[in-house]
Amino acid sequence: MTQHIPTELGTKPIGRLLWQYSLPAIIAMVASSIYNIVDSIFVGQGLGDEAISGMAVASPFMNLSAAFGAMIGVGASTVISVRLGQEKYEEAQHILGNTLSLNIILGLVFTAVCLPLLDNILYLFGASDVTLPYAREYMVIILLGNMVTHLYFGLNAILRSAGHPRTAMGCTFLAIIVNCILDPLFIFVFKWGIQGIAWATIIAQAVAFSIQLKLFSRPTELLHLRRGIYWLRPDIVRQCLAIGLSPFLMNSCACLVVLLCNNRLLQYGGDMAIGAYGIVNRVVFLFVTIVMGLVQGMQPIIGYNWGARQNDRVFRVLRYGIIGATCITFVAFLTGELIPAPVIHIFGAGPELTEKAVKAFHFVVAAFPLVGAQMVIGNFFQSIGHAGKSIFLSVTRQMLFLIPLLAVLPGWWGLDGVWLSMPISDALSFIAAASLLAYMTRKIKNNETHRSA
Image 1 (tube, rainbow, N blue to C red):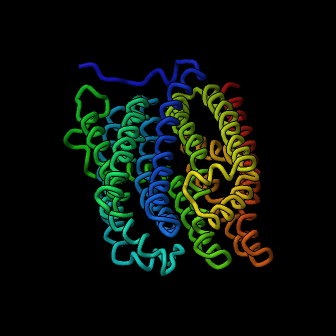
Image 2 (image 1 turned 90 degrees about the horizontal axis):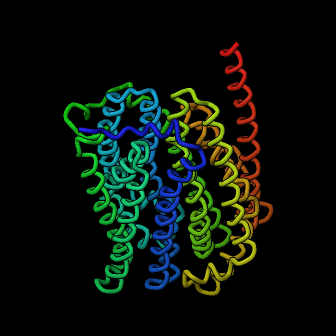
Image 3 (image 1 turned 45 degrees about the vertical axis):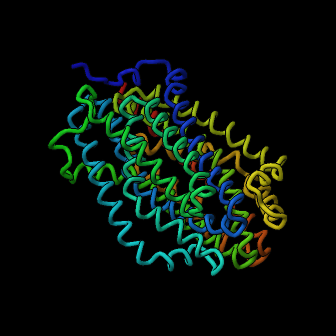
């Protein structure tokens, strides 16, 4: 039997390789973001502004749930990329098995812990007596299907590292198509309300996960499911968690920030301010997902070449990634500054919600051209196994800058202070990332000089 080994990661021209691996991930991520936007549109059109605000409260909590699955998937896929570059194929196989086991355990534990505390958690995330019923109905279903979400995201990340970026894209598209078919069916035909949106999400992910399992069951694949790879190995668990901790902390900090933002918005602008932030967040996240797709495509290329000690190729990928990400986030800046109102109207928002969302859009994207480069730099350190630096960059925007600004600025400028804290933290986090990259680049190149001397 012939097994597929992705050696092209170390030989093919960087530009073509980056396009080959990033384009499927970008398409998949954008499509995934679009179906989240479609969810909001169906909620807005079918259930109204209060339901949109309820989803805005529930969304960061749902993202926190998915962050656990991403932590395992991203960490495992990064370690797998490096091991494939080192030709340690048996160890890569065990990482696949441990990924499944870890995601099942974490998925079940997260659900068991959160379900009994759900109302308290949602109040913490900014729910009011008006929006709590919508948020609760949505999150009960999401939590019941949490293990499926973990497994789906985890295996999709490994598919890319195993040399199947198009298959990973196909699984994402399948989930999106199923979700978009079920959304109107469950809301307008079955009359399931906001629960229908949640059921559509979980069922769609379960269908895509079944396809992933089928692929990884083929013995012809270098990485495939077999006996003896599922018992947790402490060394593999430590490696995956150490590297995956960076995106997990980034997602967790983002959830914490949304929690704080929602509470500040509720204090200074009410439920409609939370709904406005929810709409703007979904639109902006569309551009963020394009950058995420780009860095997902970069990750296996950087990891493989770093493992193979081809640093010139590593830095070329980094350079292309920074340029591409900056162009993407600049388009987001132009959208928010030039045409915010037409974009907001797509969600069926009422006059008050539209007015607040347009103003929020102007503020949120003010420094957005810098965000793409910061994301690429953080992913670069994650991909070469420098987990500590990646974790530091993951938390700088939220923990070091945004949270203190959220504590101070609203006291001076009210609701505008909440919005203003976001572009300021974007600019400061970019400065921190660029400074660390400059330092590490000099250090890596100095080590190369000493090795060759």
